[in-house]
Image (cartoon, rainbow, N blue to C red; front, side, top):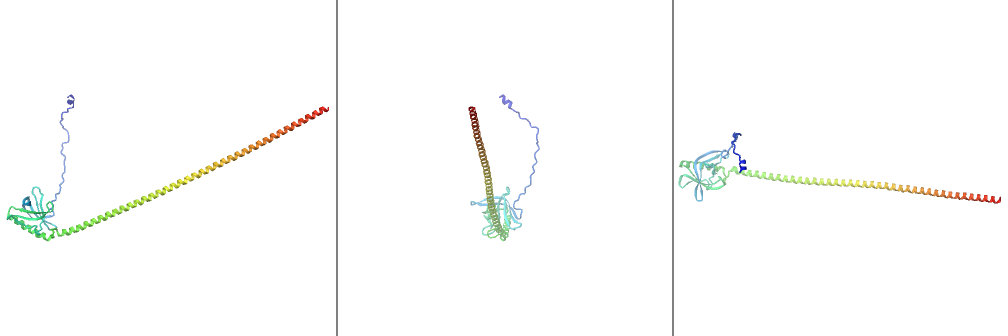
Length: 298
């Protein structure tokens, strides 16, 4: 308990610090709706319904518009939900076969229905109904809708595609195909270049190996030459040693001969000395005998 009291630190009031709120600059972001290249052909507040599972269900409430593209001249129908601005209907007006043909709904002059291939979320055949507050507003909508259909008939082909767009798409497809071909060609060229580079590298490696082998052979040859030179030197030294030994042997033999000669001379001298000694003895003996003979005679 005492330790707990010692460890207790009462909360202190912080009186120093930087209390300034950091300034954050918010950059203005341009929001594009897709309507920037279009002008208003017609607009009116209305409620859109969609035929789902055998009944009409509300799709959205807001300002429905017919928008004329400034460059292409084509007109499309657009309706955004006014609270969320979500696109709930978006399609070209193309009165072909059973598409985009307005009919009054349930005999009401305020509601017109039509079938169309819509692109609000994904390409899908939809059946829409548009309800206005007054019959006059609905009548004006039908008038403008039909006018837009006549304008678009001149611009769209049998498939509901822009004639120029189809040509552009074909041209675009050709360009894409050409790009793809060029890409493939470049890839092939790169592969070929890589192949050539690899072959060149292999060639260089082979050349390097050959060079190394040649250098190794030269090195071995040099070592062999050095070895042979060493062997030659060794042989020369051995020859010199043999000659020295032979010379020593000859000198030794000469010395032996000289010694033998000296010994022979000594022996001869000894013999001569011995002989002369015997002769002296004989002379002395003869002298003594003569003296004895003389004494006897006397």
